[in-house]
Length: 158
Image 1 (tube, one colour):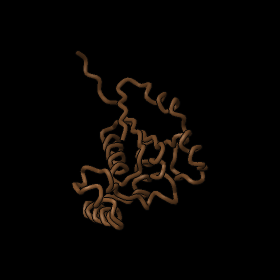
Image 2 (cartoon, rainbow, N blue to C red):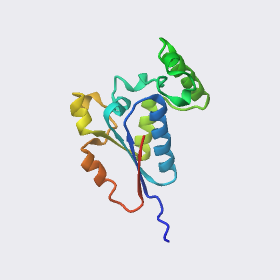
Image 3 (cartoon, helix red, strand yellow):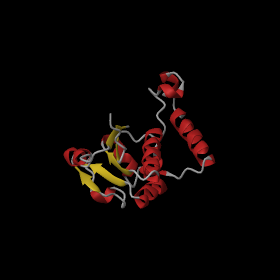
Image 4 (cartoon, helix red, strand yellow):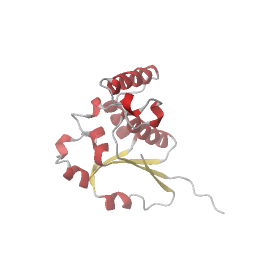
Protein backbone atom coordinates (compact mmCIF):
# COMPACT_ATOMS: atom_id res chain seq x y z
CA UNK A 1 0.00 0.00 0.00
CA UNK A 2 1.54 3.29 -1.09
CA UNK A 3 1.31 6.46 0.96
CA UNK A 4 0.45 9.62 -0.93
CA UNK A 5 1.60 12.80 0.74
CA UNK A 6 -0.95 15.61 0.99
CA UNK A 7 0.18 18.19 -1.55
CA UNK A 8 -2.86 20.42 -1.77
CA UNK A 9 -5.80 21.30 0.48
CA UNK A 10 -8.98 22.76 -0.96
CA UNK A 11 -11.46 24.18 1.52
CA UNK A 12 -15.09 24.94 0.65
CA UNK A 13 -16.55 27.50 3.05
CA UNK A 14 -20.34 27.69 2.86
CA UNK A 15 -21.19 29.54 6.08
CA UNK A 16 -19.59 32.73 7.37
CA UNK A 17 -20.13 32.12 11.04
CA UNK A 18 -17.13 33.19 13.05
CA UNK A 19 -16.33 29.62 14.10
CA UNK A 20 -16.48 28.26 10.54
CA UNK A 21 -14.45 31.10 9.04
CA UNK A 22 -11.66 30.77 11.58
CA UNK A 23 -11.65 26.98 11.23
CA UNK A 24 -11.09 27.32 7.48
CA UNK A 25 -8.53 30.11 7.85
CA UNK A 26 -6.53 28.31 10.54
CA UNK A 27 -6.44 25.06 8.57
CA UNK A 28 -5.51 26.82 5.32
CA UNK A 29 -2.78 28.77 7.10
CA UNK A 30 -1.52 25.61 8.80
CA UNK A 31 -1.34 23.85 5.45
CA UNK A 32 0.77 26.66 4.00
CA UNK A 33 3.05 26.56 7.04
CA UNK A 34 3.61 22.86 6.30
CA UNK A 35 4.42 23.62 2.65
CA UNK A 36 1.08 22.36 1.38
CA UNK A 37 -0.72 24.35 -1.33
CA UNK A 38 -3.98 25.69 -0.01
CA UNK A 39 -7.11 27.25 -1.52
CA UNK A 40 -10.44 28.42 -0.11
CA UNK A 41 -13.64 28.47 -2.18
CA UNK A 42 -16.25 30.79 -0.67
CA UNK A 43 -19.79 29.80 -1.63
CA UNK A 44 -23.33 30.74 -0.58
CA UNK A 45 -23.28 32.43 2.85
CA UNK A 46 -19.53 31.84 3.09
CA UNK A 47 -19.22 34.79 0.69
CA UNK A 48 -19.88 37.12 3.63
CA UNK A 49 -16.34 36.33 4.83
CA UNK A 50 -14.93 38.08 1.73
CA UNK A 51 -17.46 40.90 1.34
CA UNK A 52 -15.80 44.18 2.27
CA UNK A 53 -18.91 45.46 4.07
CA UNK A 54 -19.61 42.28 6.06
CA UNK A 55 -16.34 40.49 6.85
CA UNK A 56 -15.61 42.28 10.11
CA UNK A 57 -19.17 41.86 11.41
CA UNK A 58 -19.34 38.06 11.44
CA UNK A 59 -21.05 36.38 14.40
CA UNK A 60 -21.04 33.11 16.30
CA UNK A 61 -24.04 30.91 15.52
CA UNK A 62 -25.99 30.39 18.76
CA UNK A 63 -29.12 28.75 17.33
CA UNK A 64 -28.84 25.11 16.31
CA UNK A 65 -25.18 24.92 17.34
CA UNK A 66 -24.78 21.87 19.62
CA UNK A 67 -21.29 22.97 20.62
CA UNK A 68 -22.79 26.01 22.39
CA UNK A 69 -24.36 23.68 24.99
CA UNK A 70 -27.36 25.95 25.37
CA UNK A 71 -30.93 25.19 24.37
CA UNK A 72 -31.93 26.50 20.94
CA UNK A 73 -34.63 28.62 22.54
CA UNK A 74 -32.06 30.36 24.75
CA UNK A 75 -29.66 30.80 21.81
CA UNK A 76 -32.40 32.66 19.96
CA UNK A 77 -32.98 35.23 22.69
CA UNK A 78 -32.15 38.83 21.78
CA UNK A 79 -28.52 39.63 22.48
CA UNK A 80 -27.31 36.02 22.84
CA UNK A 81 -25.53 35.98 19.46
CA UNK A 82 -23.83 39.31 20.22
CA UNK A 83 -22.79 38.09 23.68
CA UNK A 84 -21.39 34.81 22.36
CA UNK A 85 -19.55 36.67 19.59
CA UNK A 86 -18.06 39.17 22.05
CA UNK A 87 -16.91 36.35 24.34
CA UNK A 88 -15.32 34.41 21.46
CA UNK A 89 -13.54 37.50 20.12
CA UNK A 90 -12.21 38.21 23.62
CA UNK A 91 -10.72 34.70 23.81
CA UNK A 92 -9.31 35.04 20.30
CA UNK A 93 -7.66 38.34 21.26
CA UNK A 94 -5.95 36.57 24.18
CA UNK A 95 -4.45 34.16 21.63
CA UNK A 96 -3.41 37.09 19.39
CA UNK A 97 -5.58 35.85 16.52
CA UNK A 98 -5.94 38.47 13.78
CA UNK A 99 -9.34 39.89 12.79
CA UNK A 100 -10.94 38.49 9.63
CA UNK A 101 -9.69 41.23 7.28
CA UNK A 102 -6.11 40.94 8.53
CA UNK A 103 -6.23 37.13 8.45
CA UNK A 104 -7.33 37.25 4.80
CA UNK A 105 -4.32 39.44 3.98
CA UNK A 106 -2.02 37.01 5.80
CA UNK A 107 -3.51 34.06 3.92
CA UNK A 108 -3.14 35.77 0.55
CA UNK A 109 0.43 36.87 1.30
CA UNK A 110 1.36 33.30 2.27
CA UNK A 111 0.10 31.97 -1.06
CA UNK A 112 -3.37 30.72 -0.14
CA UNK A 113 -5.63 31.14 -3.17
CA UNK A 114 -9.00 32.75 -2.38
CA UNK A 115 -11.88 32.06 -4.78
CA UNK A 116 -15.50 33.21 -4.88
CA UNK A 117 -18.21 30.94 -6.27
CA UNK A 118 -19.69 32.36 -9.48
CA UNK A 119 -23.16 30.92 -8.88
CA UNK A 120 -23.36 32.40 -5.38
CA UNK A 121 -21.93 35.75 -6.52
CA UNK A 122 -24.62 35.91 -9.22
CA UNK A 123 -27.36 34.67 -6.89
CA UNK A 124 -26.63 37.36 -4.30
CA UNK A 125 -26.17 40.03 -7.03
CA UNK A 126 -22.62 40.81 -5.94
CA UNK A 127 -20.01 42.58 -8.02
CA UNK A 128 -16.27 41.98 -7.89
CA UNK A 129 -15.88 45.44 -6.28
CA UNK A 130 -17.98 44.18 -3.31
CA UNK A 131 -15.35 41.54 -2.57
CA UNK A 132 -11.89 41.79 -1.04
CA UNK A 133 -9.02 43.06 -3.16
CA UNK A 134 -6.92 39.95 -2.39
CA UNK A 135 -9.45 37.67 -4.12
CA UNK A 136 -7.79 35.49 -6.75
CA UNK A 137 -10.93 35.34 -8.85
CA UNK A 138 -14.47 34.09 -9.31
CA UNK A 139 -14.78 30.44 -10.35
CA UNK A 140 -17.54 28.05 -11.28
CA UNK A 141 -17.64 24.90 -9.21
CA UNK A 142 -16.29 23.02 -12.23
CA UNK A 143 -13.31 25.37 -12.37
CA UNK A 144 -12.75 24.83 -8.65
CA UNK A 145 -12.83 21.06 -9.03
CA UNK A 146 -10.22 21.39 -11.78
CA UNK A 147 -7.98 22.86 -9.06
CA UNK A 148 -8.16 19.41 -7.42
CA UNK A 149 -6.64 17.66 -10.43
CA UNK A 150 -3.35 17.06 -8.62
CA UNK A 151 -2.33 13.83 -6.92
CA UNK A 152 -2.37 14.30 -3.15
CA UNK A 153 -5.25 16.82 -3.15
CA UNK A 154 -7.81 16.78 -0.34
CA UNK A 155 -11.12 18.67 -0.35
CA UNK A 156 -12.71 19.72 2.94
CA UNK A 157 -16.22 21.14 3.19
CA UNK A 158 -16.77 23.51 6.12
